[in-house]
Image 1 (cartoon, rainbow, N blue to C red):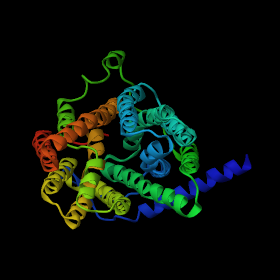
Image 2 (image 1 turned 180 degrees about the vertical axis):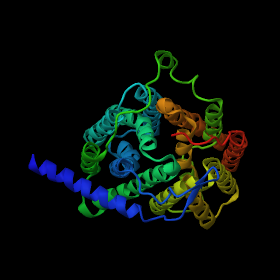
Image 3 (image 1 turned 90 degrees about the vertical axis):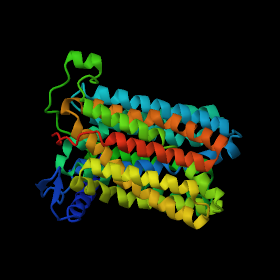
Image 4 (image 1 turned 30 degrees about the vertical axis):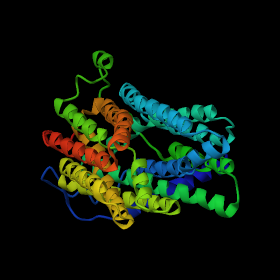
Length: 430
């Protein structure tokens, strides 16, 4: 029991020191919606810091497994591309649906933390067990529970970040969280590669070792994620029956529609990796470029979030979507390995301009008592739109060629910008 208390105390000391370091990063005034503000230099809430650490170790754990999952399925279990497609399709679909349900559900209770703890706990329990699977349907079941965990936690976690953060620095808070997430995505594959190369252990053993960072996640949530009882009124019985959708503003719904249009042109990054391979880049270098890509995303996410606090969410998102359009247009025409790598690294900046800004704007546009529903619909639209986006992109690639597929994605993102221009830059909500 004493050792458990010492672990919790050590975690609190670590998080307090990290919070102090972040408080010194930016000391210049910021503006939101052209109103003067000195909020940007203020330190992030300790719960935001804790959830950032949680995301780092979660991605550390998951990225020790998922880059190796196709190899494990084909070489160890003897499955093929069809099995992989079935597993990923079912897993991501259930995750997207649960993001909506968990968001709606979290509006009806006093605390969000139980959803967060259950979501991360379920994923951390089942994910490493993939190392014990001997047939691919078992991997499907375990991946299914892993995505159930992600679906349960995502929307309530985003709401909690918005609620404990001053509205003037929501971009900074979501930017920090995304940066920590991407940092884990860099560290996880590198740790797995080191274990396979230098420790000489098997794929199964690497998967089982992914349980270690998953345990750290649970300890951090229990000891460092703090939540005050909700001060806003719970939705009425009528609102509960309607799921909160009628009470969300037309402006917010137009924002969701623009996100759906953009998502339909935002296919899986696997196609970009295929483009890099077709340009002549060796497979051994793809993993290195993927790690470098996540480093760009990590750095740009944090500073991009702070930028959105200064220039406004709408300007930041449109800038990111226009950059995406230009990147996909470039991928439609470049053919050399050098040019493809340069465009790929520039692509990482798009995430910095949009990921944290999109979430911060959801919080800005939604009433506090329906914020779970707002984040649920946001996460659900993106998740459910991703599947047809990749199918459409793949069909166009097969029938018309890669250049037409990338150009189509470029056009759809430009159309999404035109729709987003119609969304009003409403004042932020507490």
